[in-house]
Picture 1 (spheres, rainbow, N blue to C red):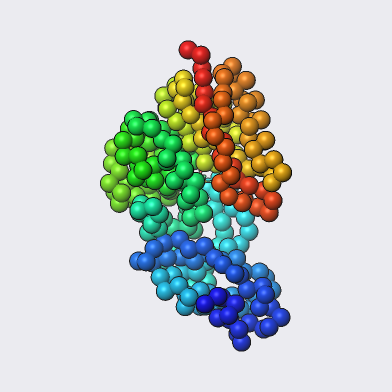
Picture 2 (cartoon, rainbow, N blue to C red; picture 1 turned 120 degrees about the horizontal axis):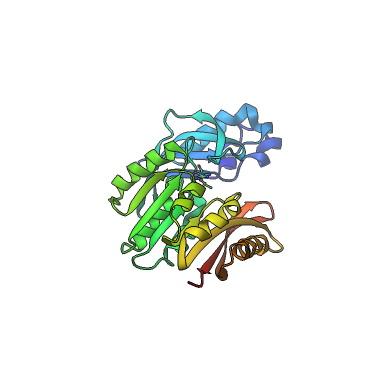
Length: 282
Ligand SMILES: C[S@@+](CC[C@H](N)C(=O)[O-])C[C@H]1O[C@@H](n2cnc3c(N)ncnc32)[C@H](O)[C@@H]1O
């Protein structure tokens, strides 16, 4: 049953249209967290809304209300906890088990199709630098689809995310394939020049500042998966201009090999992925 229907007679008729039509669920049958946006007009009914969510989805053990946009270098939302004690869950995606607490680490279940698409492009024996890894969902999905990948370094600065990567390496039997590195992405790339067949840059609001370093650490002929945002009218333009500018600055030839709209990021703004090949002419 829809939340609006569930809340008829609880929320006054003139406010019913403001009841959220959906919410994100992170977790699995063993336990999940629901994340919901509740407008301020419904402040007095927030606990009723949380109870209705729990009633509609039996696996939901906690309800978090999202307050404001993602912020800080760890890219976290602020939440108000409406119901539930624990927010640590095991999320299952494409058969991969991901333990996480959304109040401590970045995770978006909405990127699942992008992960599958990217994983389908990975070749045998690739050594990958996965920058801005969070709890490393792309690494585990890649490994699931392409077990012949050689090694994925998951580079991340949030120590809580690093702890979850370690747990998820155990849960997904990924020892020796996915290696967590608690390090700044830029410093990591500068130490590892010309080393990676692929560099994945999952930081849509800041990855462009690291393009020079990413180009430096990819092998000749290697691929960079670059994330950015762009307006509905021309979603890839800014991303491609940033790529071409940085490639020209370091005197390498770059060829765009794939463009993808990942999902809506904000009204009339998309999160995009542009894949490009780097030719260093060596
Ligand atoms: C948008 S999240 C993406 C996380 C993950 N790849 C995913 O898709 O769920 C970006 C992550 O980059 C991390 N981060 C931000 N700046 C960083 C830096 N300079 N070096 C390494 N990690 C960084 C943040 O802590 C955050 O976990």
